[in-house]
Length: 83
Image 1 (tube, rainbow, N blue to C red):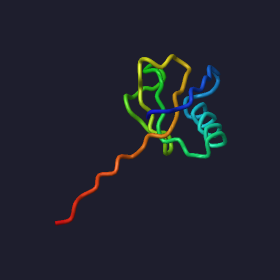
Image 2: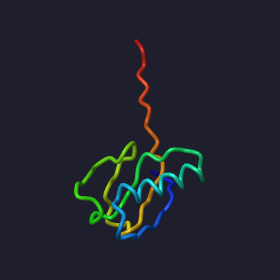
Image 3: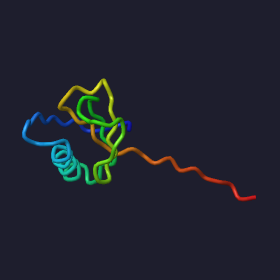
């Protein structure tokens, strides 16, 4: 992801799924696109890589706790040449 939105949510009553849902809803309204990747601090997720809905959750130690770096990761298209 080259460009994303930073979202802060330190609500102790909400789990990561509901926090991510709020961030994704805001992202959709603001940018008109569905986010598909989110980076969070490693302490926020029990597994290294997991998905919540259509959003891939990845840990990144440079993201502060309670912050979500959410956005769209472009899919690389591999073109095959036909003989």
